[in-house]
Amino acid sequence: MRLKKRHQLPIALIISALCAGAVFTSSSHATPPAAKVSAEQALIEKAKGIHKRVLTLDTHADIDINNFAFSRNYSQDLENQVTLPKMISGGLDAAFFIVYTGQSTEADAFEPAGYKRAYDSAINMFEGIHRMTTVLAPNQIEFARSVADVKRIYAKGKKVALIGVENAYPLGDEKFAVKRVKQFYDRGARYMSLAHQGHSQLSDSNTGEAIGWMWNGLSPLGKEVIAEMNKWGIMVDVSHPSKESMMQTLAITKAPIIASHSSVRALCDVSRNMDDEQLLALKANNGVIQIVGFSSYLKTDSAERRAALKQVLSEFNVPGNVSVVGIRRGPVGGISEEQRQALLKRLSDVDAKFPPPTRANVQDLVNHIDYAVKKIGLDHVGISSDFDGGGGIDGWNHAGETFNVTLELVRRGYTEEQIGKLWSGNLLRVMADVEKVAKDLQAKK
Image 1 (cartoon, one colour):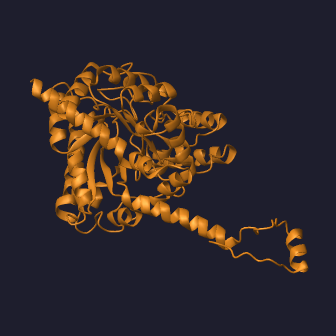
Image 2 (cartoon, rainbow, N blue to C red):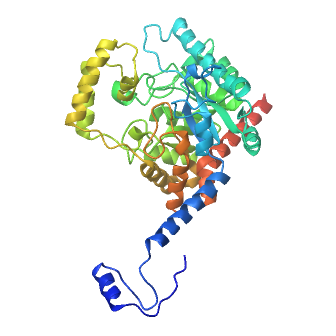
Image 3 (cartoon, rainbow, N blue to C red):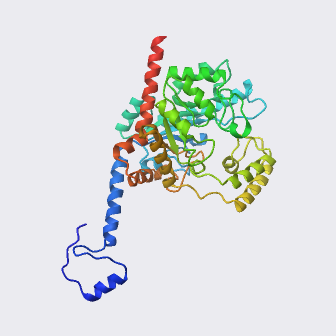
């Protein structure tokens, strides 16, 4: 806003202004509040324009299998962090919806009965996601199987649904696992992690840092599965597997890999995050890390708090693949509800003695983005939420607040081109590379 120059000011006004700390020059006055508001509004309008023009893609949104009925589904504004109304209001264009399977610790977990339970659950989730796009809300959202599909659906003004598989445990044993990779691909899976919280038949989990290792990286079957994923065009996701599993994956894969929802270990020292060696290895592979809006992976507990939590969990014999977040969220396998309530009381005592860090916010998320960009380059960094799976931070607590991430990126000086790469361009580049590798591998057979 341009200010009109005034040649004369009353003496009393000048004295009053000086006493208030204002600074005058011969040609200007202190910036009035209205001018500051105008500058802020201009920045917001700039961010709104960028947010509207770039394709925003969240690589990790969990689902509730109960939300695919006519009476209750994602076309309604449910309490879930991700719904179609929230995606529309927040300008979130696309999301990988997750076929998630917790790692069973039951006695028959690695026997046919355990694998069957996991497989049946996974298939139910696949079918639910397709039901959303074909029966429940086909006018609002379509399913994408390729980068070309993503761009085509986005151009039509519809929301885009993709599928990621979190934990390949449902693939089963040597009899089924390799064959089912193609089956999962045909059902729409475009990325898959080989483990979750706890070791699978395919890979060690990051939780091995606390509970010890099963495979010291990948199992022989896991190595076969990675080769098969390359063949059919499923991105390998290393967000939950161990560091050694990731490094062995990089020695095998013929295509770039992703970390679908991880953050930076240098800023938040938890085993789920990636250290600098992993980040540099990911860059060398031409892969991408999708920085996650999950408070526990953006800000970590104090050493004293971590020790106290570990002691309590040990006293209650909590399985190593069960997190404090999971305990507080609801019933946990292997723990009675009575035990869980007693455990919750002890956890509250720990909170009182060693308070958890304040909840992370959008600024903390972008701090991790900044770090990764400086360490490995902007072309290897993206964004994810882990909504409805524990994710959510102040300022980006649901899909309806997605614009706030773009706004903070604009504040940090990122350009529209750079923001487009962070929101979707880098991930889609990896996906396209994986598609090409698959096509080449299939042509050799």
